Length: 117
Image (cartoon, one colour):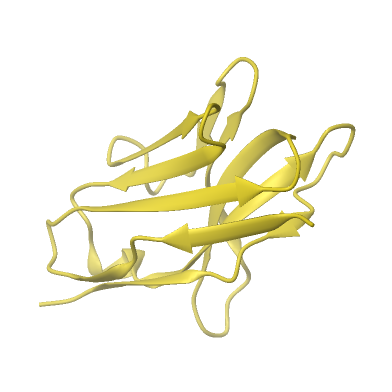
């Protein structure tokens, strides 16, 4: 059974940092990603990383502030978030893409990130 378990969310002041973690079990995936969603809006891709080449992709709004990384031995993906802004407040989801699929087809439950003074 595939499981994605996020951790690391919380409340942080503007300009602060958080690191999200996503532990994956039950399968190997070709790519992992972090998405985020705010009430009334669609889920948006924040960052993604491939398993073999570690090719990364970032939303323009987080480039230079967020870094996605992965530890294949631990089957864990991370999102280091620096210089956080109030507009980064959202529910952050870990996602995984199975080998041979074009879309992210496994999802975690989400972890809340709130940036506020």
